[in-house]
Length: 182
Picture 1 (spheres, one colour):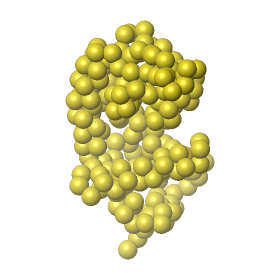
Picture 2 (tube, helix red, strand yellow):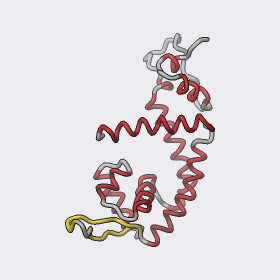
Picture 3 (cartoon, one colour):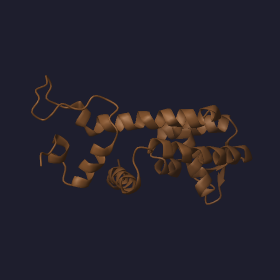
């Protein structure tokens, strides 16, 4: 059986099978024997594939939630505040994988819209806690309902065990950053 470049460079055939089963929306990468100027094979590179998958998801997100006037980072913050009830800005940034400057901007915009509010942390008078307002809770619930359809659309071409494998592999990649503190 002839192996493609992806299979040769991976340690598990399940990854190769998963990637081969995805629909081709761009020209297929050149075969390993084809000569290209760079010799890089952009269409086979993880960063390029992740960027294209992100573009796909972002398009579905905008279509499904665009009228709610929420960015993906604002949505993530609302969901995590809703999950926790109350949360510090520092913890919210870690839960949503946002750096301090980004989470600060997200919080300012959500507060400006009246979707979240601050209160002093009774355990630490120097700190504040964030919580959803009633308007924020209502918006978060609607956004989550729609986000389920967005996730389904994003993953549409990938079904069953392939979907579970893809999500597990992506969690593995992202968990590595959490474990290393990056």
